[in-house]
Length: 337
Image 1 (cartoon, rainbow, N blue to C red):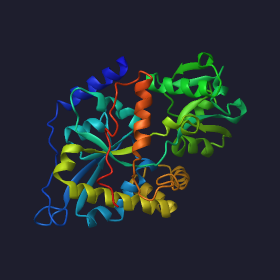
Image 2 (image 1 turned 30 degrees about the vertical axis):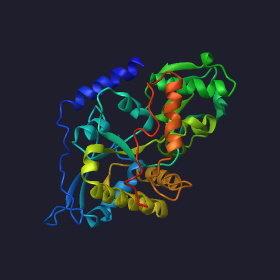
Image 3 (image 1 turned 90 degrees about the horizontal axis):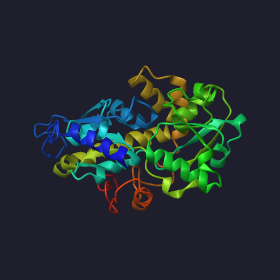
Image 4 (image 1 turned 120 degrees about the vertical axis):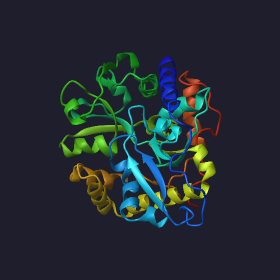
């Protein structure tokens, strides 16, 4: 809790250095642009360097979906204090964050104008990966093994939960403070288990020719099937510009649905837009993610209220967050029907 509050204080201090007005805002008009037909400028801030979580955005930009919607979208990488700070301050209208990281935003005494408006991926695709030779086939198998932790209370509480639910003893897990940036290398050295999102770091182990075991948090504890990542928007800007917000999300939907139907071509588009990416890695990742963006739902971006609330209830009941009222922090009202 102390760490969460420190993170929240730093976030709020950063937000207060900016004006809480939406930059690049245009009044509503029939073509979603300005009154004279010019494109409405939108700034979108990523959560990290470009990867296949973001493919739909780059496809929408490359294939002209944004322009057809009357929008000029600029995609930028986040500052050190994160995408949420930039969106809350009005420097960007939309961005990417994760439901678990957003909890402090919704418990702050100083209200921040941010809410999730679309799920980029329908289910939590993160879990624990390990080399097959280490025999960690379920959470209890982490006993006596080295787990690379980044030291967050929420992270460690989740690890404790899945190990104990699986019949193991969390006290016997060796917590090694290490921020892993190269998963294949870490697994071949002193680390036995790493928390990864399979679509990127999991694919990197395939590319390295490693045989691995992987189990997902959502398959152990249902409350851990939270939304990760999500598109967030500046609430005040969206309330003032609802049709533009809808137009942006509809064009973004088209980009992601194109990536679902055409993963190889979408991967090529992402690499064209971001040439420093590894082509083989992106294509493998894109093929894997094609079935994950929408999964079983018909409406891209839909956020299930029960699943959203369940995770925050778990945080509160385990002393990891102040109470977050049901229905707080997200909306489906700007999504295409």
